[in-house]
Image (cartoon, rainbow, N blue to C red; front, side, top):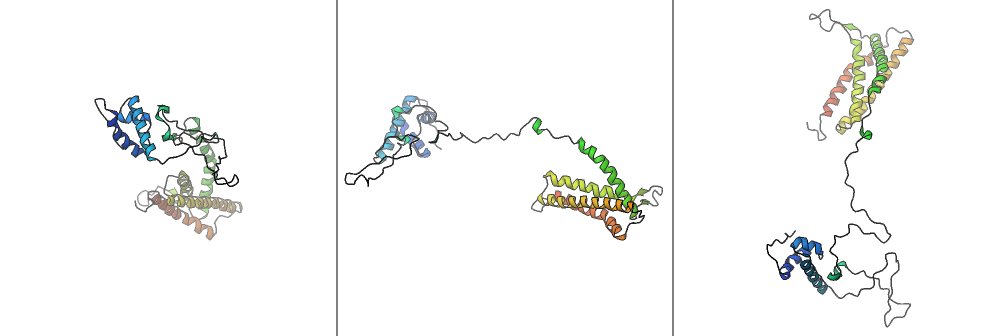
Length: 286
């Protein structure tokens, strides 16, 4: 882009022509008077004179063109012209030509800024520019929903799930153990509580990872699959306990015992894998 002409004394119009020509070459058209005033840093009279000179030069370089009257925007027909040697039926249809903007005489030009949008033939004006307002809405629409109802819903579910898993654990061999023999012989713990803590906690955690949308794709896919699997196992565990309890069974069948005994190990593996995938980028590097 050419640099605006900077002078500290009046410059004749002839000396302004080269700079105006360079500007016209860069724009690909004759600049407006306002553009010339700004670029050449001259007054309205000199800008008008330079503009008229550029128009004259552009007109001299163009081939001779015969212009017809400007058509009405709503008109859909074209005028026809006949030659001296052709009949009316074989007359050649000559389309109407709209005079180019750069051929308008300089005296008729008005030094105003160009209109940002002009109505088309159908009377519909295009948008001046696309909206760039990407600021998120604020107010009541953006306030997060309160989560305390979830706690109210989770309380009875926690009681039922906890008792069901502990009861099923006792039917499958889980019970009171001494985890620290020789260190704290009096310390005991019921290993049946590992079932609700492990299975249900992992299901809730994987469900949150899946729905958060802030983890890599692989982690989200794994979280979805494992969360649904953990919820299904939790439901089957509750069903198995209540069926055994209703039937008065004091010792679960070996098939159920096998599945329940593997749950802590399975939960540990899924939790470790999900934690690894969460901190792994898409390209596989850490």
